[in-house]
Length: 139
Image 1 (cartoon, rainbow, N blue to C red):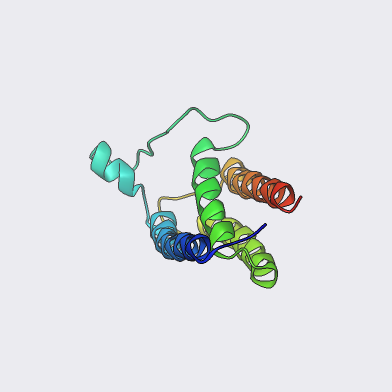
Image 2 (tube, one colour; image 1 turned 45 degrees about the vertical axis):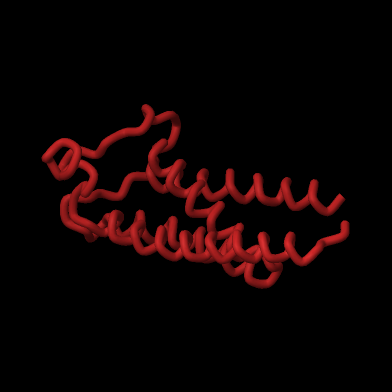
């Protein structure tokens, strides 16, 4: 596949935007996860104890699946080079586990296995999607 300068520029621009969004979303994720209550609940319901639901939960927490699909896809897009890609996979799995375990000590929050499972499912869905895309692209 021949890549011209314009295509290379577009790819670099997309990667640059993905890196910015990935780092910004990580900061926001940490703030939302470690806040003792629900920031969204404070704004939407004027009650920090209520967590808004995008969809009803299935076997795992649906909100957590959605968040970690987005964060993971941004990370995998931003850092797609092989050596860094492996590090970003480890980082995203680590942060998904660490942040849920932090709920053990954060006031007004609680550790839930369904939330942890939702985090991991979101990362796995993104990882499988990206690996399939890379496989198809390299054919």
